[in-house]
Length: 261
Image (cartoon, rainbow, N blue to C red; front, side, top):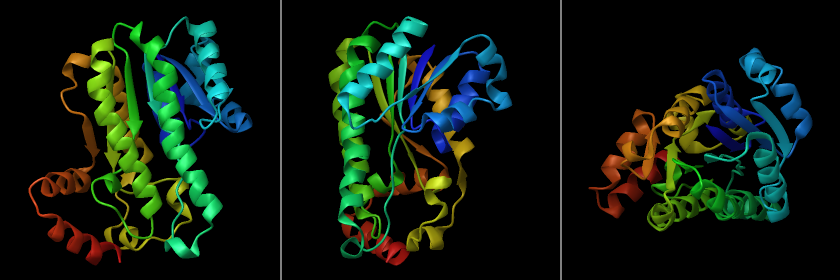
């Protein structure tokens, strides 16, 4: 498979790229920082793939359509096509909304919402040409119910969830499967320096490799076997999603108040 991964210089994106490269797939790692990408692919996980020219890297600002065009052209020129997009790039801002930097919050919306939307728009014609084209958006368990102290981040993941649900139906006629993954807190560079009450109380039980394992399995599975639209990662997220489907909003709100406020 020819797989384009955004936000691939670290964290979930890089861990996923490593696993897919080791399984023999062709991987395009894209991020804003190309120097970090070049350093990343020196890892032993990529040794065989690099030797076989199954790995490329490139600069991608997901908020800019032209940047997406350049990344797509790189994939087509090197691999001849694209079979899957892992829309992983994202940012996180924490804190009570009025105390945070507004420009940072707006930048979060640009990356987490606009970036995912542009990727889904730009890749559709190419994925439609694949026998098993798919888009996997990285959402979050915060898209199940909004979270205090990361309200904008949660809202951006609700956007991803809604977009995924709509395109799961719309792109079906194109032969493209659109799904998302919804992990709870993940131990990564993104969460290393933030303070969020729910994270402190619940703890962090997932690693980037846990999420990467799920992404790898979903990416390489035939579309006909992907029966769900949302895939929770980790037992707490799965439990939260299951409970939220049968529990009144007032109760879910009360739980989130106790955990996150």
